[in-house]
Length: 414
Image (cartoon, rainbow, N blue to C red):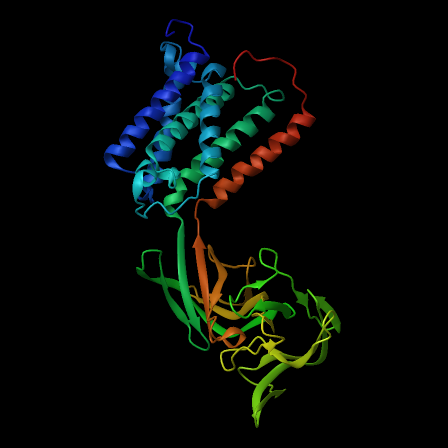
């Protein structure tokens, strides 16, 4: 080992050494502070990296180590090491790098692997090798035969490098907008307030909910039955009758927007097309074994009216849990410092893009439900994302070129 020519053993040994050094650094000084890579440090680092690759390529004819950086004997161990760490990272829950995690797992950075020293060192080594491979192939470029290779590897290099260097420039902010009040102040994950170059005015918030469900609950334990595999009936507009355990449930009346009123000792629901209205069903329940019969109102409640359950016997009650939101959206107007006025509807997974920002619907006042007068938005900006996309498109173009330009010669090295 370590006798020329170096092979896979030396390649894996170097990656093992980087891993060991990274673990020791992680235990000694803690995680890597990636926040130092904010602009313009990341841009300067990119220029230095490119110049370093060019210098190492020019010196590779004299220095054996630099020559090996573009060899398959170094590329394969490096790629295997990165893949193993990525798989391990995918199997472990990951938290933001600025969060302090207790215990040995926290000290080793297993749950913050992107900022762990061993991951940074192994990943950086892989990036250097990939860069040397690309520079070597470009230096002896053949128009047709090398197009797929260069596109694939250069695209991967651009995507990984720009994604890593640009991670410190990603901004994730939360902004709470109230109806009729433009808001331009947002907060980062640490609670720091930032004034934005745009303002969001909420006009209206709306929720579309799934049809109500009917379920059986144990009166003593409060658990949904059957335990471990709760059963339910989806009481949509077409539903009239169904079965839960030994009970046959029939919906006699439905009121989508209802208010609970007291008539003597009884409770009933009436139409109430206003704020705080709840969904209510008048149901009849018959036990198919004992023929016991109960009927009455069941409601999921709202911020104005409490839930209403129907007691079937000493053990069971019929309930309607809170209806699950199917879609919630905000009708907004965004004002920018460049005097643009953008009107749009923001939904979950359907962000509004304004001057480099993606505005996502994050939450709302859940106590008020569909009558919420506020919307909570997440604003995300990643100035390096176009470069990452460019790298991905280059890889796709390289895959297409592999079909167009057949390989005519074999390479001994990557």
